[in-house]
Amino acid sequence: MKDQTTMPPINGLHHFAWRCRDAEETRHFYEDLLALPLVHVIRADNVPSTGEYCPYVHIFFQMRDGSYIAFFDLGDNVKAEPSANTPAWVNHIALEVASESELKAAKTRLEQAGVEVLGVTDHHIIKSIYFFDPNGIRLELTTKVASEEEMSAAEKNAHCALATWTREKAERTHV
Image: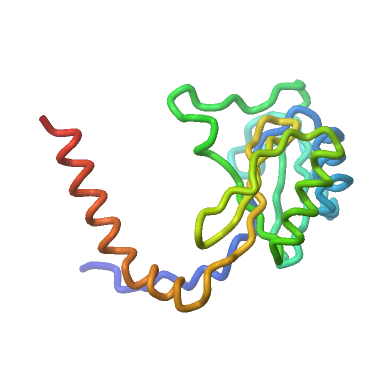
């Protein structure tokens, strides 16, 4: 008999974790430059889920909505390498600011700190800037510009748009 248990609702993001080269360098970038407070540090010699011996420090920076961005420093001064089969612009973390003026202020602050920033890019429903952290992780700061009506219309069309993409992709990839 099939399990009839339904999936509990997912309330939101707790944290996104990535490897960093150096915890202090990463702390400086996220706390001093992006103003995300360092709120928790876990230091251990063994991985709790696997028992594997791998000394590490796990650092957490909190966002205003209560979610976190977190990093693992494995003590070897090595950062995560990008995937060779994926363009650098694909994998990224998008963080939201409240307005276009805040987005522009963030761009100015980052550029004054010597961070190369791409944008402001208009995606019609959001506007964004893009930059890399010291670990080579691409970050996007974004702000919503679409109305509730525009977002509602997009939601109503989402499955149809994906079905169209899936059909066209199959046509392109099957000779």
